[in-house]
Amino acid sequence: MRQRLCRVCGGWHDIEAWPHNCLPERNLAASDLPVPGVISDTMDPVQSMVDGKFYTSKSALRSTYLPSGNAEGKRYVEVGNDPARFKSREKQQPDRKAIRTTLEKAQARYARGERVHPNA
Image (cartoon, rainbow, N blue to C red; front, side):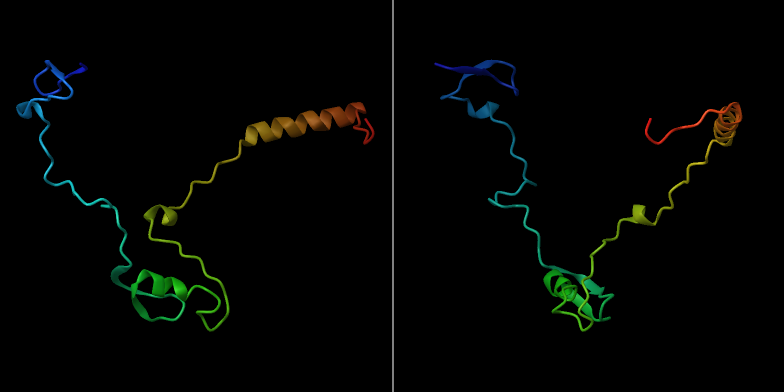
């Protein structure tokens, strides 16, 4: 006889004879389908940047990207609509003081006669 702690009432119950009043409530919003995550081929009308036509099928739109599907014979890449790709990235400002001190050190070494030999 194996028992398990009940999350509903907090008591211990036999696994083979679990009381019906302690069964967890079923989520009615959850699907009973064996494959609930199906991705459809249909979509809202989208204008192709390749030929200017409107498509409601993802596969038909993607077929225009292939060399056999477009008149130019070029390959295209589907980018998406992520707004983050339009965000400009901040350029890192160079540390002018560190650059200046590095150059001063290099000039001082050169003035002292230090040289870097290619075979060293």
